[in-house]
Image (tube, rainbow, N blue to C red; front, side):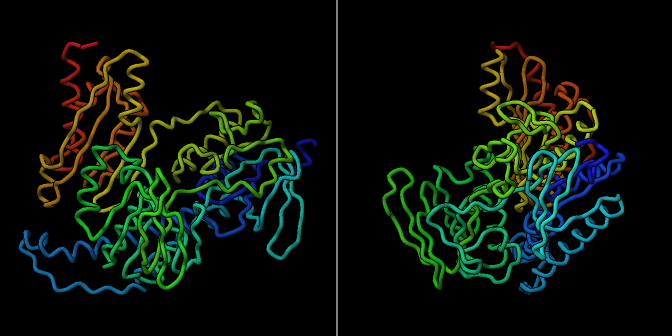
Length: 484
């Protein structure tokens, strides 16, 4: 097919943040672009993920702050009993979603992107079958296609959902009711954030984790201090090493808990509701990738560093994939970055993405954030490349701004090379950790040395001085003779 016969230069399948950034960037670079979306514009993040959940966290966080009489009294403040309206909190999230979704749609339209409503599937190279909502099927073609279909909540075997008493984060963001007692299955960032929301609004929470420790994906030192505040310090009963082997919706919801190792039944619970927060799986099954010879790995589409889709390890011409469906880092800002990189590469530019410098955050109160390597990964790299790993810890208890806020229980762990000072990673728990991590991410992206970073002046008094102290501690260690 000649280039002049294509309907578009580029078709993007999926209008989440990965698809949005790709389509907008391509159109701004002079390409004719269409974007296909079968649900709401904005994908998971805008409609069922980061945007509505952060609205709920913002509102419930205000409730938590106003209800903490002991904390307020330390300032000399005495507040009346806190009252809140669940419906208006839910409406705050709904209104925010509608506003951002509208802005995103208008942005694409102003950029000249054609929005095609329906379900897209491949009918061969550069050919997309589009099933519209009215059932009409038609064919559209493009020189290049970017897959950006995202992901959906994973529901383990044995768990039945009804969307009301047993549900995933997709339904939880609607906050249709407040169960007196809710079990949350999974203690990753989704489980922790919703535990934060529900406990702030007066719900009793049981946190169920199949792995040996609660918060298994977080740095152990961070998990210890965060767990002390976010779990033990609240009305949360945390269970680890147990599997929710069976969950039956109803009033009450019945849960069978089994030992993770032996699979023996150890406990039965009856709760008002269950939130299934056990991760996410790629949305790739309906794309008819088989027609292109693409083989997925547990649903994830294989790509190279330039976002090209791979078949038997080799790039397939004119086909790209970005976002959660690739399984690289399932974060909205990762998807957006991948989308831009994919477009630049199809335009002939040579760009790759540095996943190590992409930060992640959990928006609890206080927040948790990280970037770069974990301590285990850093130790493995140090052993492989024969350098000594440096680890320093900087505490919020020594920070004037945190002390002024009477909220100084926090920690930053910085990982670096002792031979040249290069920053390898950082993990933070404390006030505004999600904002603080960006400074480290920028340093990591540029492969900067703590020796140079320690000379940078930070505003006083601010929380950023927690990072400054870590850099200075690390720089001092560089001056010591290496033990390697």
